[in-house]
Image 1 (cartoon, helix red, strand yellow):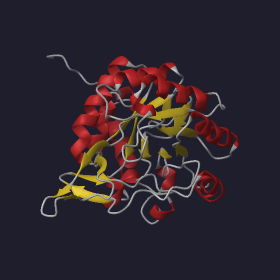
Image 2 (image 1 turned 180 degrees about the vertical axis):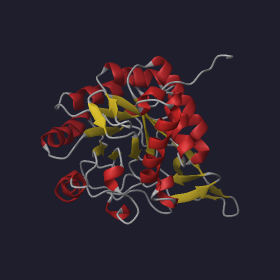
Image 3 (image 1 turned 90 degrees about the vertical axis):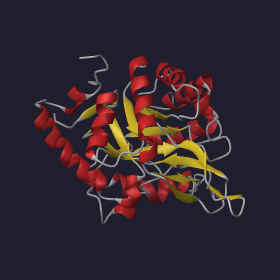
Image 4 (image 1 turned 120 degrees about the vertical axis):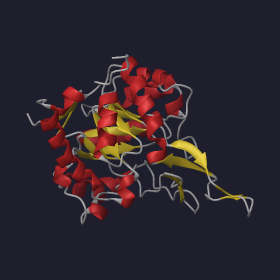
Length: 305
């Protein structure tokens, strides 16, 4: 077993470095920058049952230590993804985790049925937490609804299921517990925080959709807090997401309780970061004197010693 190999229940990964959905396109765009075979996994852009045009522009705006996006799940639809995107992704030599979003359990089930019968899919990540589409967080803010989606997708076949949860709730813990009880193999924590940007001189919001999702280094302390809180309460693996831009960020998430991480916004300004982090992680294992990176997961000490 490799020193970087990790397991998230039924999902085995070569290492804990993943790239977050929506920040890596369908991978082809990153060919010049990333050694795909080095990555623990690739999570392509969210796919929906039908094509979506997305939200009106402007769709992105830079903020202090972060970015607001209001893409609106712009994509060509599930059928085209299966016909044109997945064959390419499956041939890259990295685990492919397909991120899906839908409006009903039946739509989630139909996509899950097809994915379970397809070649080259390692797992399914459920986007029940997008803050900038109508109804995007409905499933993710209600424990019963979140659990029902997970149960539906789990019943479609043997593929591991990851639930990507929203921080835009009073507490993520009840949602995480509900999806764990429903059979989720892991949770991705967190999706973006809802926010907005304003041009005060024009008295107008900058984003065409008014509201967007905040990501980047600005949200890392909040993401770390949520990862740590959920790790104390829920006993399924966690994938940490939020503001990772260097090795120290990765290690902070791991010791807080995440088994793996996703690199997101950093892909836009340092597209080669994810594969660089894999090499750096191997050095950490050697320096820390452990036989596997997983031995460092959840080792944060909060007592006085």
